[in-house]
Image (cartoon, rainbow, N blue to C red; front, side):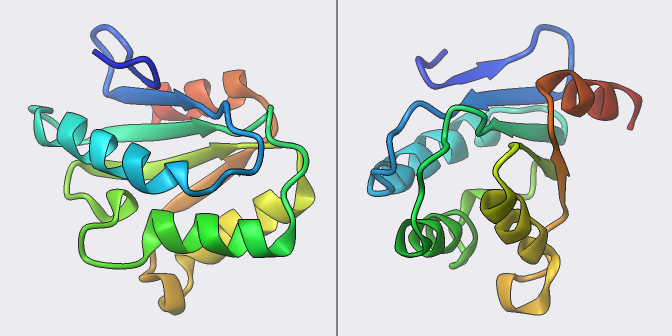
Length: 127
C-alpha cells in the first residue's frame, strides 16, 4: 500500500505515523497520497494521525501543518471518505491546534485528540 499509511485489515481505519522532524513541506505530498488511498475506499474510514514522535514544532510549522491538512477543497481532511480525523499527541500545542479544526475557520472538520494510539484505535473501533 504505502510506506506512510496503513489501512488496517478488515477495519475502517487508516493509520499514519508521523516521521518528520518539523519539515511540514512533506504534508502536501502526503496529502495527495492520502487522497489517492481514500478514493479507493469502499466505505468511510477513520483517519488516525499518530503524532507522538513530533515533539519540536514551532508556531510557524504548526500553522503551516494545519493549513496544509485542512484548507482548500482538495484537503485530505475534507475528503468525503473520512468519518473523523483522530490525532494522537501528548504535545499541548498540537492538541490545541487539532481541536481548532472543528471551528468554522477550518471548515468544521470533525477531529478528536487522544494521548495514546490505543485510545484512538478503541474510539474508532467502537465509534
